[in-house]
Length: 170
Ligand code: S3P
Image (cartoon, rainbow, N blue to C red; front, top):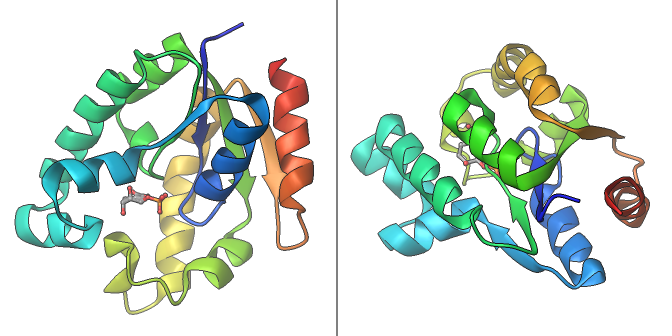
């Protein structure tokens, strides 16, 4: 059994919410990579993007994933773009059972449309289209990066998702 569980998936797919419950019920520690980045920089994610740009954020994301995934017995919630970097995929796959939360575009849109914390979406003229384009670009990467996936839509019960992941992991 892999030491950790890593959750991957698009913004708004529920990685943090599901991750917290999953960690609690398996008596594992919960780590949210975006939160680690924010704490390290003493800035919010939008501030980091605004002040330093996406590359700076991705470099931090890579080093924090590398560092944190070395730990054991943790549930790691990654940012939605973590899988665009091969190094992250390699680090997550070698240390963690990687679970893709496969959420449909409309559910994502409904969940994030008022979010002010997603810099890749907040300035777009047509947010649904931006989500669709990013989703199309990333879908294959999420699939090839994961050991297991679960479908998520607006009717999905969080606790059912947690059970499915637990059953697949244990
Ligand atoms: C991003 C997702 C965000 C955050 C950053 C970039 C992405 O995390 O890491 O805004 O590229 O999809 P969430 O998936 O937790 O929203």
